[in-house]
Amino acid sequence: MLELPIVRCPSCKGETEMDKRVITAQSNQNIIFTCLFCGYIERNIETSKG
Ligand SMILES: [Zn+2]
Image 1 (cartoon, rainbow, N blue to C red):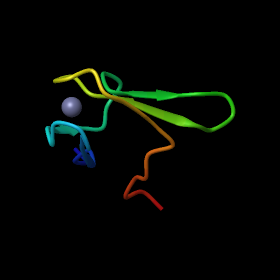
Image 2: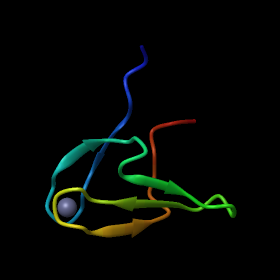
Image 3: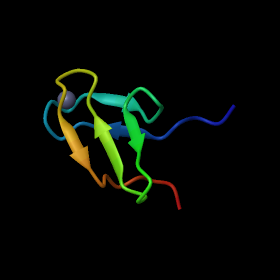
Image 4: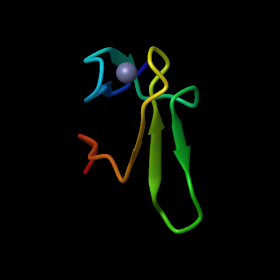
């Protein structure tokens, strides 16, 4: 099993695995992160992938 990258919410500093619960990938390759803890939404977040 590969470990999922961890993303940290810039608002509440909560750390979450980058999975389908928190990441929405759009057709234009934008990625939207929604924090599970505070509901903060960040577009075009940077990932450790690539
Ligand atoms: Zn948050």
